[in-house]
Length: 108
Image (cartoon, rainbow, N blue to C red; front, side, top):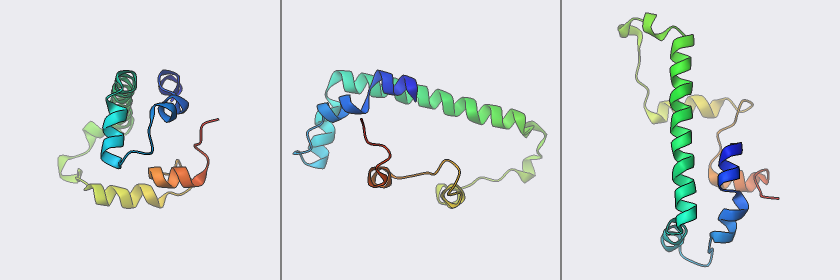
């Protein structure tokens, strides 16, 4: 998170944004700003790498290779959402609207 905010601060995004535009035009205008786009792509790459490391370490720590294939179950996104949204006190999952409404994610 620190590297991402250093690379592309919330204030930089806000200054580059034009809220007077419609949603699609607004998104396109922001994405067409090369510094915003490049920083976003780099941050997404970091996020993918971190997520892969987390899943890999969880599999290793849980001795996933020892689990019989017959016991491995595939979850749909909807099934997973029921699980992670149920745990309110531990790293809550919030939509962007919920984050904005909370007031805890505003730039200083």
